[in-house]
Amino acid sequence: MLTFTYEYRTNPTKEQIRIIEHTLNVCRKVWNFALNERKSWINSRKCQVNACSLHSEYIVPADEPYPNYNVQAKALTLAKEEYPELKTVNAQVLQQVLRKLETAFIDMKRKGMGFPRFKNRYRMRSFVYPQLGKTQFIQGSQIKLPQIGSLKFVKSREIPDGFVVKQARIVRKASGYFMMLTLECNVNVPSPLPTGHPVGIDLGLDKFAATSDGGLIERPRFLKTLHRKLKLLQRKLKNKHKGSNNRHRLNQRVARLHQRISDTRKDWHFKLAHKLCNDAGMMFVEDIDFRVWAKGMLGKHTLDASFGQFIEILKWVSWKRGVFFEKVNKDYTSQVCPQCNAHTGRKELQDRIHSCPECGYTTHRDVAAAQVIRNRGISGLGRNLDENACGDGLTGTGNGLVKSQKSRKKGGEASLKSAS
Image 1 (cartoon, rainbow, N blue to C red):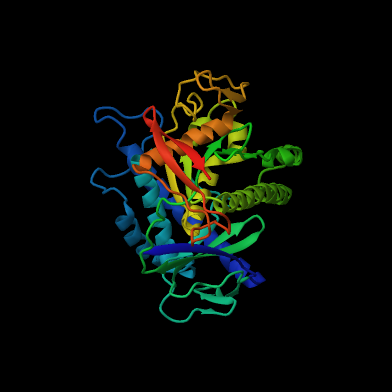
Image 2 (cartoon, rainbow, N blue to C red; image 1 turned 90 degrees about the horizontal axis):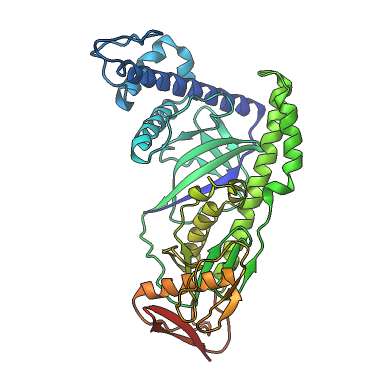
């Protein structure tokens, strides 16, 4: 099963904006009520049997079952008779809110995520229609949604043939309202095979990326470019009274600036990923948990570079372009010579040149690390590799002479040497 998500910008009318905001408000109330119900049940079971809290106590019957999704979904149906406001929103939309809360509690134990939080009017930003029916609900640049009606959107790209729209999500961003369509196609696409020109990539803060071919890519300062303007807006926001219209308008300006930074960064990541895949048949990167980097003294610069997002984008672009992608072991990539596999010792951060005392190989430190990553990726394939770059159908190759590269094992790891 192949699943895509296409994002489109919408052009809702004033009445449709009112309906969308009303839906988000009702979804927020359902989320907060359900979360408070679960939280009260959990806190009522924390107290010891022979003792009571000195401050307050949650009045929950002892035989009250845990309010999971099934219990709360049934209670939601009964609550519509007492609260008619719930009837103004599609029933499946409210059920998806409870299902999302159930997933948040499961991820809290399974993935070690934090406890779910209550949402104000800024935090509830989307809702989803899980089923759109079998009728033709998309006609040209309009989509028919329950309660909202015919919603116009900018059809920036056509829906591929063979794909079926399974669900639609309406998202409120700082720059407007967007629609995300989930597309499915009942096909199995095999993963790209390891063939073609191998490229290793080393990520860092001095240079955003270094390739095993000798390329060095500077790190753009997305946040630093607009940091002064963002700082002034946040300073003004601090002095505004909570709940006032001035604070709301200023909060929207801050959100638009944050979205501008995020969109610029994401666009640059996609363009860089496509550029790297142009001349590669295989892509190897380090298997790094960048959340650890974000907790260090350079966490602000790490989050600004957004290495984790770039790795996910590179993985997606590589699969789409037919480039083999794999992560390799990250340990000691800067302490090994890529030419002779000798251990060169630990390097300080200010040491930017790799010079091997054994074979005399000298190059940039990040380039040497990228070559080590490439060698580890090739040796992990478990076979010799022949590269053909004459344009015989491989992704990212052009017309040219035939070049073959053979990997030779030396010192326990493969060392790649080009032969013309």
